[in-house]
Length: 221
Image 1 (cartoon, rainbow, N blue to C red):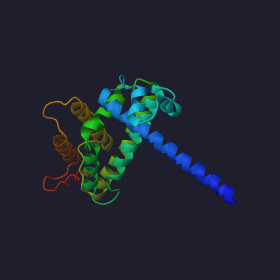
Image 2 (cartoon, one colour):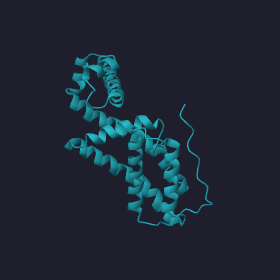
Image 3 (cartoon, one colour):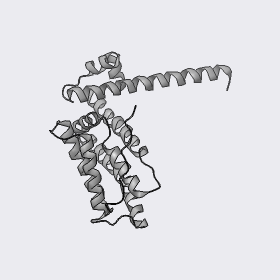
Image 4 (cartoon, rainbow, N blue to C red):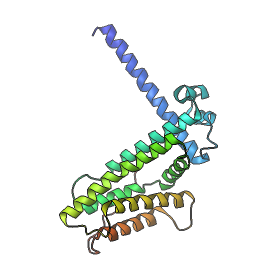
């Protein structure tokens, strides 16, 4: 490639990086607006102001509010799913793996995550969003299933119900916890929910009481 060609390529790469950064800044602003005001009161103009760009720039990337919300769901869900997957090891002690996944299912700040999830679930009547929601649930199951099956194979888990039912129970628990946290229900907080979720796992997996529970991760700084 000629020097001129390399210069053009470098400029194009920088422009693409700037576009990607601006797009993510708009998505982060939209996420904040959604948590603060809910879907119905989140306007493109407010998103643009929060992101420090014009409403025209927002429309350039996302065209309509519905498109912005749909892409926000994809971006937000994938980001949190990847963070959840990397929070737990894929090998080693199965009980530690399960507990790490459970802790990561109810991360801090829990209120923020819960409100986002509740807003998305409320919009799932839309066929496109419903499909995205289903894929998100499907992606949650394999890490739990793999850790549980490893524990059964090693003889450290003695299940009281099928693996698939236990995994679905965990997911249902986390979904229910999101509702309670989002509504600021009295007595519900992250520490209590994590403790109950781990106790539920201990019972359903048949983990003896004398097997210690790994401590929760230190809060992110």
